[in-house]
Length: 352
Image 1 (cartoon, rainbow, N blue to C red):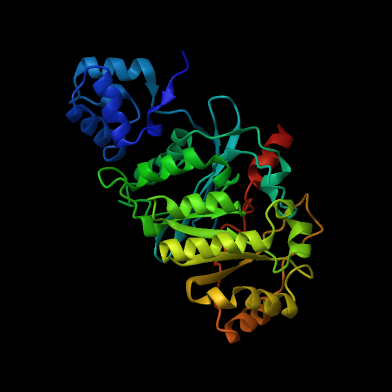
Image 2 (image 1 turned 90 degrees about the vertical axis):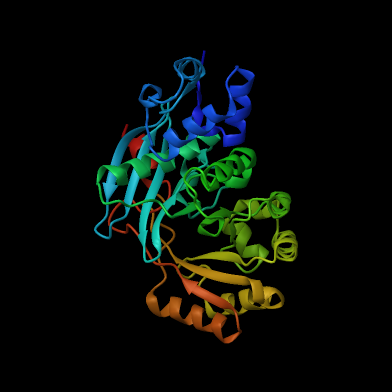
């Protein structure tokens, strides 16, 4: 029997499962506390839990399904983990030290089918979705890494923008969010969580209608359909007009700000006229939109793309700012290691 990861259950699901197997509700709370507060990795370490309960949990579930394959640490404190799944597949997770806390970027799929021409994640096509338990365990592995350092540090922020398209694995991604937000467990606040999508309008609408209440970032990367289709093939199915309709629905429904992510590619999408066109696109909804300009991390296999220089980034920023668009430039992390998303995984698979 293939055992499931117990990290894939919300507290309510754990209560229901144990009740169906003859155990009272309080057992679920005990187990949950051991998993997320005491952070044990063996059912046998749950010494206060009834032995029969431990036996039935051990029969059906496992705690650890990921093993650390490679760990790279940057001079700026960024740590990139390459984890091996139980089926041998490799995924990436990144810990970043921010001024506001410790942020972890998690992966939702093995590979990616979105087809962004500048992205290392798409070098290896999607083979499967991750389970919610596998996504949660990435966070737990990073927290255990922090615990081992005995600095009393905890993960405070989460970004769902690693390998894969989160909205293409919507159910497992949403379950992951409910688990990590639970105030009896990791208790990561919804305003400290951001989900990034390349743009699937119906899922953006479903996300707006959900009770998740976490932040949303849309990877736009171009101000018009012709250019966006050149660099992001998903735009053929979901052109900018449909995306903006979904953005408007999200803003109206949630009254929450949405982030527009924009990677600057030298001589591709970084000209002043691109900035002006982007400002015009966002003008009517600028009160609840923030543009996040992202310096490009070059990828060896994608040498047609280069990083925009500082002056170009500044000029792009200034055009948006003068048009009243809220804009920021993302602080870079891990530039001295395999920084681009998917790059470490791709390298290891090719070398292996």
